Length: 241
Image (tube, rainbow, N blue to C red):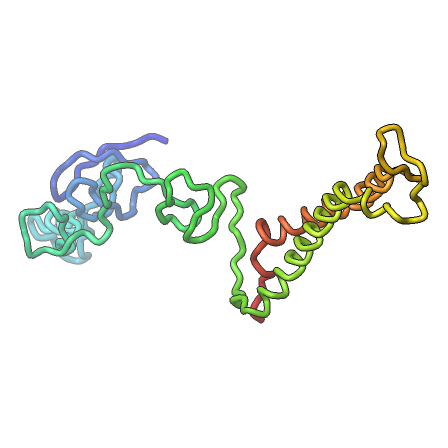
């Protein structure tokens, strides 16, 4: 789009404007004066003369000159706000001034608060996850009481007691199985090659059977006790309705 240079009527600064603004009001970017843009190539019209009488000398030119001169608008009052580094100590600071923090500060993209620590994955203020880009949902829950703690930890305690009892049973069987079988119907009248009491069924068979029967319960109860008492030791949350 072609542009035309026109002078500002207030500061006479040459301004480049497109032809599409002819007849419209613009503001000078240097002094801020507002005026109507006129087409400089348009002929200046002379004022019409009254019929029936001679025109006064210079009357038409004076009237045309008055029509050409636009009325100057009052300049807006200077703002009373100043920057903090201005000399006037009584002036108010700029309400939209930038704050210089001295160094780059890591902030949460959701709530714009400072991350603690700067490389934190989850914001402690709003719960926004900087990796998944999802904000954690917050909810109000009741604080657990003594009854909640008892109901939550009791199964873990019982599982731990059962696990310890089966381990003790295995150890006692390993040590005392031959003594337990002595005097029963499984005992023979003669002795074995080592000179010990012989049995129809060897004590080791009973020990193996007891170990095989208790190994899985020991593992299961032990895992449950560790999970309930060490990992998930907090009672289940109860949301407020």
